[in-house]
Image 1 (tube, one colour):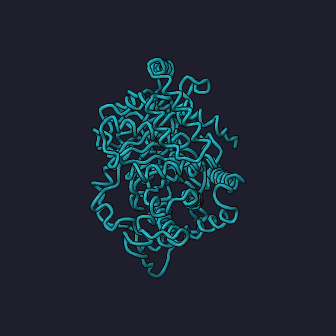
Image 2 (image 1 turned 120 degrees about the vertical axis):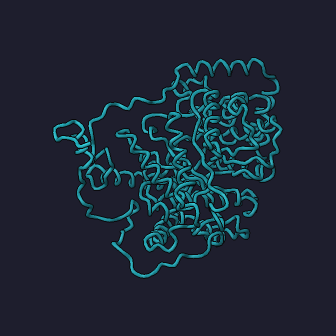
Image 3 (image 1 turned 120 degrees about the horizontal axis):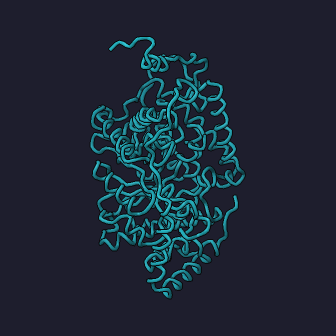
Amino acid sequence: MILKPESQGFRRMETYHQMADPKKHFATDSGIEIPAFLNGAYAAPGVPGEYPFTRGVYPAMYRTRLWTMRQYAGFGTVEESNARFRFLLEQGVTGLSIAFDLPTQIGYDSDHPLAEGEVGNVGVAIDTLADMERLFEGIPLESVTTSMTINATAAVLLAFYVTIAKKQGANLAKLSGTVQNDILKEYASRGTYIYPPAQSMRLITDVFQWCNESLPSWNTISISGYHMREAGCTAAQEIAFTLANGIAYTNAALNAGMDVDTFAGRLSFFFNIHNNFLEEIAKLRAARRMWAKIMKERFGANQENSMKLRFHSQTAGSTLTAQQPMNNIVRTSLQALAAVMGGTQSLHCNGFDEALALPTEDAARVALRTQQIIAYESGVADTVDPFAGSYIVEYLTDELEKHANAYIATIDGMGGAVKAIEARYVQDEIARASYETQKRIESKEQIVVGVNAFTIAEPPFGNVLKMDGSIRERQIARLNEVKGTRNAESVAKALNNLAETARGERNLMPCIIAAAECSATLGEIAGTLRECWGEYAG
């Protein structure tokens, strides 16, 4: 069909052929200059599956096992979230990833005054063991891997999960998944912390120790650069700040009397995947190599498994646009492909509508199909480290390692990640990088399609997921039902025991599990620790 110049269709097409001005400066978001070309062969260092794991943590990578395909879900009521979990499992998801609402993240039950307006909004509300049981109704926990994005209250949610698994008759040795449990990035960039840093670090190492003895296949932490990248840091900063936090957690575990080779193999990481395709591939390769050297040379790890940086990755929420939201499908496809090329062990793709709201079922399905098309149709999973030896990728890998090591050296000089966060060094560096990015976008030095170039007049996007405003009332009714039917004396005894332990030095996990088993609420457990330790003002 030939469109006449005066037709509406022709005018619409014309807008898609706008041209942006040619770039004048070629550099990555981390400030690494991009040469027009490189002469001479770059040798790909090492062998996949061997130290320092630049080329991948497993010898055959996806030839023998694909990455775990996760979709982040959890919203509204536990029944709605359970239905979404079942839907995703039917569509081929191989691992669940749970979003919790803000009150759950900061240790408040749904009836707390501060929870008003937030219950079920950005994730599912979990107040009690009964909520967790409904969340996983009909889903055998031994047969799925579950990732829980929870930090300040990670120990409580893990206790609920383990208790449900026991009720299902699951073998805890076979229970697999990850609890994020990364509080340092909350102080640095996100803000859902509760307790002072020292007490928070104690909770984390208690989870390490308890899981080492009771939950051997569980990843005890997901050390996350994702949220720092969402806040605006560069790729080099993401590597540096994430690995610096990993160093702090390792030191905390060693100071608690643990041997590095007993816990390091269950440490996992979480990276954000942005639009700069080649830099993101190089970032993941550089991070693997750096962590292997850190564990071997700094901490004296002897087992190769302790040196392997295994990670989950997620496409970048901060790159999604409310303008022309269907363009986000292209962005997430590019980012997902970079994650796979970089050797991720687990991947989540954002829905194209997530700049506007939680994803609809259609958006979640497209996000999952993106991963499946990459896995089964693209051919990129057929070879290990597809960009090995590429001049530009090997160059970027080396340069990112240099930049990231310079940041780590600065943090070491300040006394480590906790001291650097307390001095606001990390927060200020992230803010500076974010400001520089915003300036580049506003000056059109950095093009964002549909935002500062190639714009069109468009109606508001209509198909947006909306939350039911009555969720809080229903959640409070259930909370009251649990409180009215439980053994109040057992709850009081469990919470008193928790308080006594919190003031001492014993591992807290058995006490938290005991409180969960007698139906103490999340708010009561977190509140008991608040009374003992106080809150961190930041």
